Figure 1 (cartoon, rainbow, N blue to C red):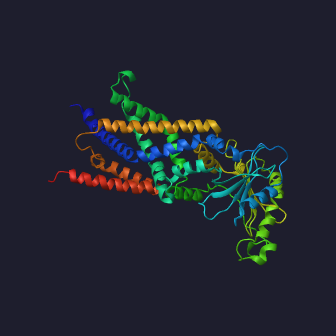
Figure 2: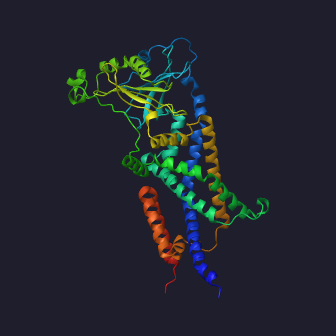
Length: 455
């Protein structure tokens, strides 16, 4: 009797049951989530290829041919206020980043979405108004990329639409890990690619392409989840618990009753500042900018946020290309002393990695090279998904296909417990994925019970 062969048989059965389960999980998850990942890849591709297109499209607004010394920021802000002639407060000013560029005077408008501003573009030399657009986010993207950004984030459906992008980001990581495990444990190619039959060739291309992209796809999945609603909240809670939060400044002032500056203490509780007070603050823009430069903020990409009553000025750099310049300081309205600061050089390793990861995901960390890499990855990911659907379509069974529950019941009890623990942990960390997994398992279980023969 060959004892070794009998001993190895249970091991082979365990390995076979595990692999069968992974195959079904990869297949069903890819089949159902593939469209969401494809849309995310397509809109992400459009986002990373359009910065230069947007600059050309809005060139008349973003640039000017005027020559000469720029006028004061206060004069530029006043020109924007006169042009707008609306009851809107200036929330921030972004001075022209170079000669030939326009200054952005940003107005807070309650009618707009969060992170959006009504922005008036001013020629810093002549004070002519070159444009009036809605800008979005830290990057200050214009309407073209703002629309693409919303498509990528929520399909233009608001907060409810963000479920799609979170579903894609969370499941993509799972699909990649399962696919990588199948590739590593599967048989190696024996025939040259040209000699393979078409079905085998498509399978080889799909598997090899997925394995080659696995690391960067996991990176995209993880960084994408940091923006999500449910999983993003979990990530932020974990970072706070571990002390990995990004350093920030405080706008609160210590002097005066209720934290208000002395000259505003008598106006506490009376709402927004008057037009005269706002005009006075606007007149201080140049002094604030000069103080920020003296305090070490030397990036050409500078944003000055005007203070609300009882709060400090905030000045920040927003250059997220390499080397990153995102230092922030706050200034006391009385004397412009620095009240707090957050310098990127002083960030811990994890906050720096988070910053770099998000910027690389958006294609801005390393400029055009970053755009090119992310665009290529998006196209290859879409190709990978198309190959997956071709494999399913051309190999779809006439009879009912195997179910995930069939593979699940074939595994040993210990294996099922192990997978259940993994699923619970992943579902807690990524709630949208967890809920979709429960729905998927419920449907699969009903189908399995209907198929199961009655004793």
